[in-house]
Length: 21
Picture 1 (cartoon, rainbow, N blue to C red):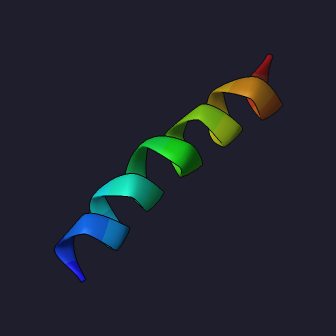
Picture 2 (cartoon, helix red, strand yellow):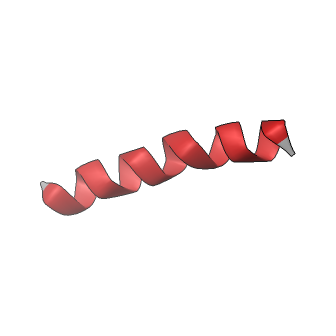
């Protein structure tokens, strides 16, 4: 569970940064 969550956090952060750009 921790591994999946940790992997999802960076993916979401990148998606938001890309959307803002």
